[in-house]
Image (cartoon, rainbow, N blue to C red; front, side, top):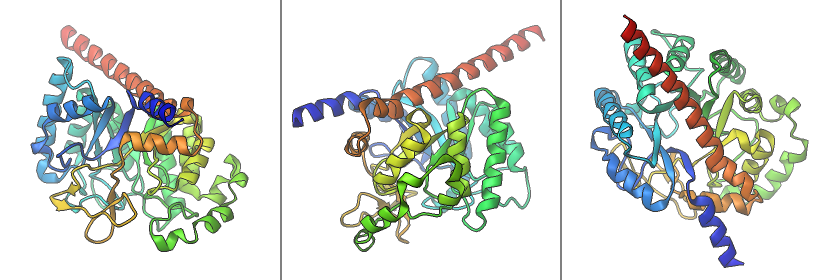
Length: 368
């Protein structure tokens, strides 16, 4: 039985896509100028899976980022880095910092947003941003969303404020409306439940909290959760996000480490959203360093904390997350869909439209 489980785990892990990861090997993805993409790809090759490298973007590294995207595009064109499925950004425009390094939270101007959008043709897959960010000056969230989509960069909503859930839900719906009007492929989201207003407790991270976990879970009455009553049960932001996923407008990222979101709730989320609308993310940093700061791990937990006691990231591997998924009763088919098929289809669809855009640009240039 153990041998069979290990064999199943290894089979499922081969080719899996981690859609959101902040550090591979010795690298801290805030230090953009220090990244060695070939070394990162070599590590991923040994593990047999692919990854979207999710970078933080301190303002001082903006030009380094643009240069890195040029290098990445040229290398991919030459057939290198087959295990790096693309690049993503977490921020810089975030309403709620969460565990994001402070230097990586700032508001780009129009020129900088256009520069970011231009990286869609070079391998930038998505940018996590807050649709409810309170922008004092500069471009609106609508303009930013449309500019990113024009470059085939997916606007990934996350890091919401928790002060006005109805306003946040309305801003989120506005973003999804623009994705639907764009019509080329779904967008993605940051991890479901985390860093967004919720009417339920979805994680029990300390020994003291875990004492009441079983009672708290029973009170949630999972059987009563229904797509038509999600706003009352989970809150307006989660309701908008889950309904968008069900419509095919978005693919939601879900962390299956059991600590960002309890595995029982993650399992119910799969039931509600559908495996075909979900992506696996580890949110992991293997070096346990972020923004030059050493991260701490508390006893009995795999989460990584900043000095202020804020959760910065996870540490569980792709294989560990797949094992967790099997432990809550997800079928091998569901696991394969969440960890491979949904991600591969989304990446291929986006790349198709990027290629069409390039062909049109080259054709226009030739005719000019």
